[in-house]
Image 1 (tube, rainbow, N blue to C red):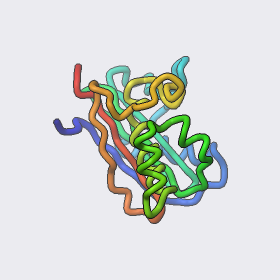
Image 2: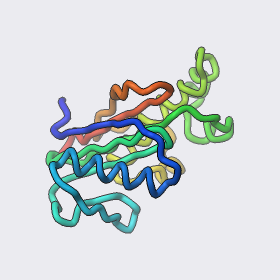
Image 3: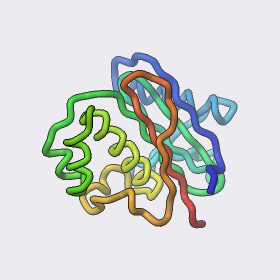
Image 4: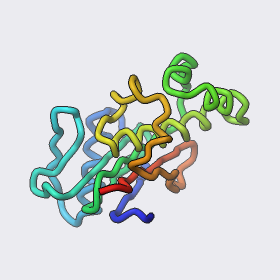
Length: 167
């Protein structure tokens, strides 16, 4: 199945969470073709009140922002840049096999971030966001969406996109 929408990633340097978030919203507006107003529902998921049938997702980190939209069904996007990862977080959100793979990787930090972005993209697509990590350890086994790493062409940065496969 192919993704029925658009996505984009851009690099930059933003000092605060608010600047990162504003940059992600501007990127979403560029994808759609004009400035947009993003609001958040009671679960924290972003939506566009002026486009109730459009599914959106945004993500940001200190060195990049990402945005995606689709009119075919839910979408989730996540982007992360290299950072130190606490081993207790890895054990909390990864299956034992995933922990083993990460620990034996040539670059454990990036191996974890590749997995993390895929999981977070799936959970955003499903509408739970990272709150879902407490109840869903293996997000990659989700049957209702497809997830892929996406090219962001930025050093030490990884991104993933998930989209609904069932309507």
